[in-house]
Length: 526
Image (cartoon, rainbow, N blue to C red; front, side, top):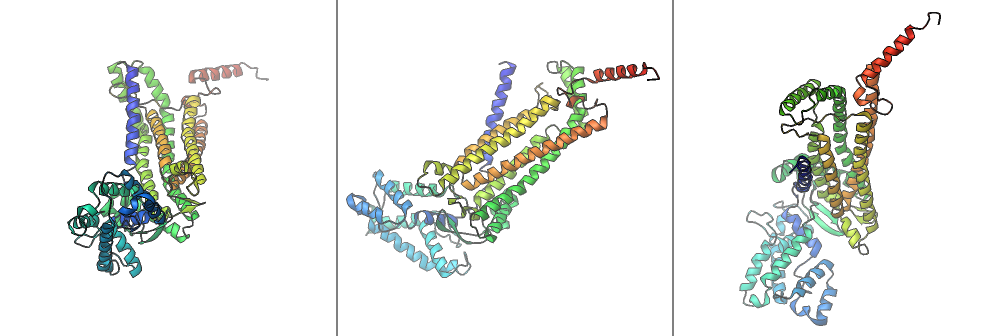
């Protein structure tokens, strides 16, 4: 394999490695949804699984049509219709559903006080009855009065039903039915992570009322992780405060997203300023690096020259306090920050409750496209995706265009450090690859994520464009300042190689001597 093939192979490895890393880190933060939250979400999505309208004898003929039409919960209609159509197992009999409903009522009667006396929560009696019922159907309680994992009650009561002489295996749904039921229900809420709230209260998610358990900052550290406590929870708390104080009318959520985006971008602007100063230092030492390359013309192929070149190059950079990999360092720092902000916005119960111009902010863009006729505010979601995509493409290529323009017209690209194997460790090339990776990542994820995240990415890219333009103004100012400091421009020879500044230092000195001689030959009387 030749050298060019090796180089392209390394680039492909970096590209795919970057994609895998980005998608992996994007899901690295934990969901704040407790077992109680999940039970409440499932009830909001499917309602009472033991609804007597869905029974075995109603699965055939016109009775089936009547049962489905009388069921007020559309999601549960779809669930049971899909399960009944598979037909390779025993379906639940009315006696089984009645048995399970009785178990639920008994559970609520015996345990609802734990949601009023502070054992689990301190709710009104009416709210406690509702939450206790949700937990009874979809979860359960542990021996220390904590909400258990999903389906604990179901599994326990299911075994009792099989052993009950009035029900038994013939009236109890088969294990295949139960497995498919659990899988379908779990999948329905798998993408819902909107459970971060500092106070326990009801939120409206996708048109349904969902009770979400409050979490504390200390709980975020102890139960969910360091990044969750350090960044995710504080940002979600800020979103909650802004949204609740403004009434949560849709525009309040948009304002909260905007404020959080601006706060995170302050760090980006600061890092850009630091990188700008680093770039100015690199520009100053570029003539020395160019001279070093002429001193060791064969450093890329000769190991001795390469070793000497690398040592002198490192000494020049160290003296000038230049860190060529600084952009990559800031990229590594920025990425976890953006992921945590993303997790905070996606996990905020207050954001999920927003409805903007008729569109629920939890509605995925893909749903707006694939279910256009049945999705409220679908056109708004489609516009959000289009605008988000265009703004991110413009943001990415604006930065790359300015970089290429400076390198072409002013020769500002610093000589890349050379590794021990003779390969150039070009941070600009690596950064370019990561830019493309991030762009692909944002577009793909923007298609599947809620519309609220599309708004966040649009605002982020808009601020990034403004930051890039401001940084170009700063760098232009620095070029003029260096020109004023050096007078003849010799120090800036490496950064002013445009069509208007193409002469070398030797040519400049020769021209100055010629002008001086011509001036000295003139008669004194002139």
